[in-house]
Length: 419
Image (tube, rainbow, N blue to C red; front, side, top):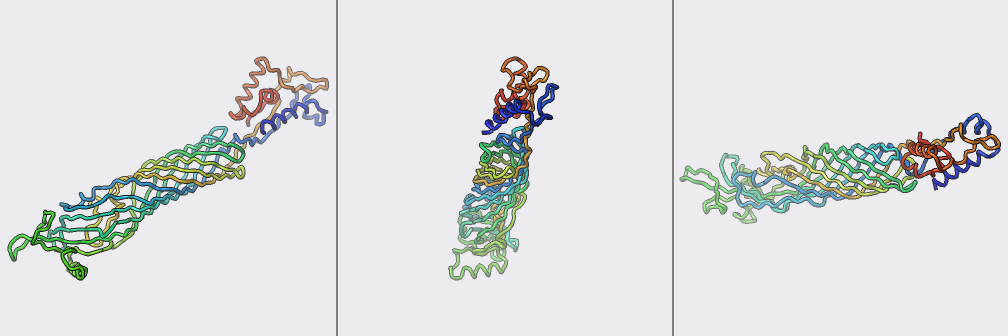
């Protein structure tokens, strides 16, 4: 349609050159005066905005592949261990970001962008079983065997804040005045990732004492055998009737022994900071619909991958003393994260319109005039080096898409130069 419009404009110019002289100050005279340049504000969809601000909202699934320290190795002389691995599940990601983009080519298709990106991610970290027996020292400085067992599955509900600076390569193309396609792809530089956790953990803390020596001079020692010896003092759930075991353990705890049944952590929630991020990757293709020259909406998908590192405390133990709890998320050494889903956004375009001037290119020293004295502006002959050199020079001044918008006849008649 645009080609037709410009062809009509060219033809109108030809007709006007032979029409009655109603604006003599602008007509071609034998003295060599030219028609004044005419400007066209080009809205052809190949010419796109060069500066834009993009705002996006993402929603999708979050997948984490976790590596953690060896929990057993953090306990002294461990026995009868039964600790299952940690699993991440039910992960979701919610993101918002704002970026400024600049398209550096004449057509406004290829550009770069940067801004700020925030993700709020949720999920559950679970451990099905936790049981360990190990060498410990009580409040009376006596050596004994401590036994810790989770009363059920340990679950931590995580809420993660993830802040990044994106550095993106941007590409966009228009199919029509309304519809288009754009893609952002590049790296994410993580600033910080922090985790808030809430746990349902509860543990049985039991004790086994073994003594050596003679009556009146008994010394507590650590029993290295998997099965306690016959003479060991058992402060365990199975050693007492179920009806009285809880009250018995409460009395032992009051005396200073590190025992208790079904004890929840003193604090069931908290924050884990200082998880170090590395360079991540993002790709985000979208289709766009332009309501105006300055505003468009985008709908598409996204895929993001990031890797995070953490340095757990040297003396990390998920629990040791009654009521003490160090969250499982704090034991993670590496987290490889993948997120994918839908993207909804908006683009605010700052149009830098391309102006095309239509100017006569005829050489007045050689252009013939008709019988009325006006210059003959019919297309130049399609032959000779002068004609082809002029066509080439005009095409060189146009954006790539402009070459396809006009025929050689039109360019021969009017020079089309981009301002």
